[in-house]
Image (cartoon, rainbow, N blue to C red; front, top):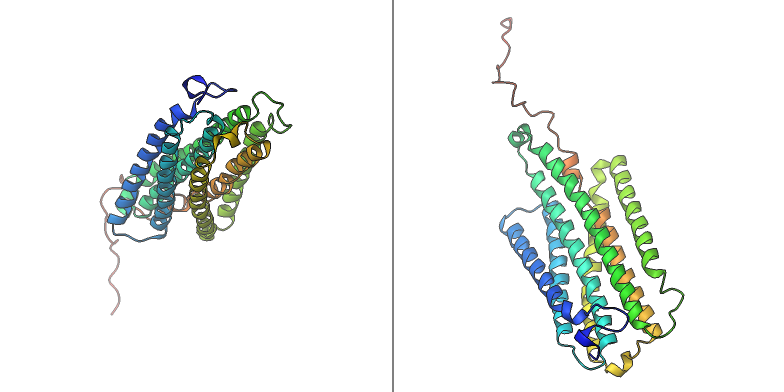
Length: 307
């Protein structure tokens, strides 16, 4: 790149310098997800919650593995005048990292639900269910918080990309408002997904797994599709000449930003909508003996039955 240190005009951030760290981060996360897949498979138990966990872990592993490879491609793109090309690749890879991160943390919540499904009455009597309820609430709020954080970071990268794409020339009308409007719209959609999920669970708790199954199918397909399309797009962009990206065509910049910001949204919303709550919320401990009740006194003696 022509600018010093790989930083493009319009921003002080260098996607080439940060690509190595992002590649390592995605690779480490993919390694942890692979370990989780092995753990679930070696348990030898089959259930709805474990299948859901496997689906999310597999999707996260595919996305993060391809994302690690995509970021590694960026580290080698040091051609003169490749600033616009590298920033386009970096934006696509950042969107993949968002999808993979949300899929993994959602898979952890399903793994917790699968654990609670196998809690014995003795463990329920010791208060394990109540403890798991607390962990479930904290994990659910963590998923919401991490999702909001990743959406904000992705919008920030898109904002920087727009500054690079239109550096030295007038910016279009949408360049200034796209990031804050995107965060507000996705945040409102997330609130709507959470509200709809809680409403459905309250109306028909016994059928609350049905929308979760469909939502997980949509999330799995969306995540894997985004990873495959994104990796293919990065490979194609790498093969294009640098002259095409100096400057970045306005139409190409708009299409890139629109695809990267819009494609992860259905996956994120369906993952939030499918957050498991049935296994913990409906755990029945009413028939479990109290740990302070003392020994069972046995049957109450009564009069002998008449012959």
